[in-house]
Length: 587
Image (cartoon, rainbow, N blue to C red; front, top):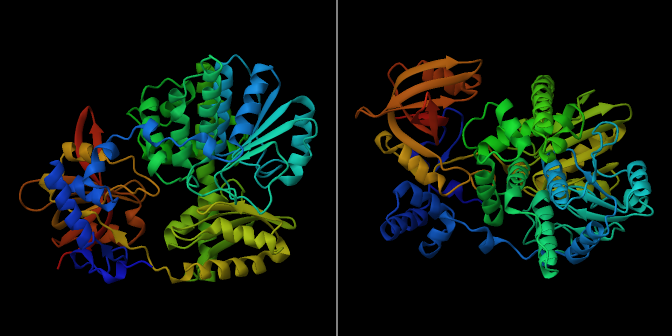
């Protein structure tokens, strides 16, 4: 149970300008933060972040500087890992023909690129196969697997395959290894090995790994086996940029080993040694060292764009190429496709939100279905509906007798398990996924019944009881304390993302010095507390809601302002900027 309602509202903000209640740290977290500040001589704001994560004084140093070797699990702890890595190495040593069958998203593309890069460094090529989202759908299919098996000795399915009983059986004449993380069923396909931390017979301790992390662990084991034979495998540390990209883009929680993967991967990426990622950074206008934000909002969507509305394999080809000229061309295509994807997404989003609003936004499930909605954008639109309503959301594109859809969930509600249950009950043609995201195919005539039943299953998990998301605040900060040094100190507790949100601070009783609309719907302000220090802030999309208009027309009123601190670099100069997320009138 969430005890947030029992805690007094932070700064007495019961209803902010965006309709949210502000929740601050508990008394126990306050005490823990003060104790850390005294024992470790660290900034109080950083200690608040550490206390909120439950970091003890003895563990502070290792948390702020996580070492991969201390956190990396033994790959052999995963079932079928021995069989998978030994068969993989045997194929390499015998120069057998290898095919990599990858999902069309960032995790699938990164997983494929890990294998292709490793194999290339061992002097071997492999065939890349990425199914077309519209013509073939998600995961292996009979025709593709039969065709690949006729030409290859080993097929490795990455980020897919765990539920592909029929297609794997169709791969006659080839061994099949599955490296995946999607929720497993009661039985596994007849593959040589299924390595998946979300198999039903796994312990669940590594259930937070994305597929690229599972592939990485298999390569760690392959390198270990090579060392036993007196041989040296490729440098795996140099491949952590791919694991980082996939972990963030697949919204895996940035805790434990995932945090170390992303932190180390960002450092690798900053060296700009992978030509595909370098070209992608350049077309995205990213000229600084990347952060997890950039992976999730700049790079990830571009890699995904090929699988959404273009040729499905462009992302994987970009991430795995070692040809700079080819990388530039592929990155430019993905950037153009991403612009096109945004236009398609906006049209579907507007229609879906209108339909969902008419149906009602206060139930356990928000959903919409439309004729000809592009399957490549329904997942993004579902994410937008989820963010707008704090409810699990499903968006479906209808064509002929079927609908193909995608869903996104909120923290604490397992969407993948409920979708799988619908499939078992015969309400879906197929469906699967994980806690936070799922895909489904449904018969048109069963659509309403399937969504009603999904709503019932989600309600049992408590989805219907969710109100507007509370705004969790790490603590108070005064403008003069918000320095570039403090932001740098806070970054040592990162990277931030799913499962490890960036700290959010409230600036109390502030005066707005300057406010204006920028772009289509954004708000730029400058504020201070009247003691001399001023901070610039940007609130994206604020003009679409009540906050933007109220701050623009402040009439001298004072406000509590809440958001996340970041460094803004302009013409070589750095300054602190607040990514403003909410505001409340100070009474």
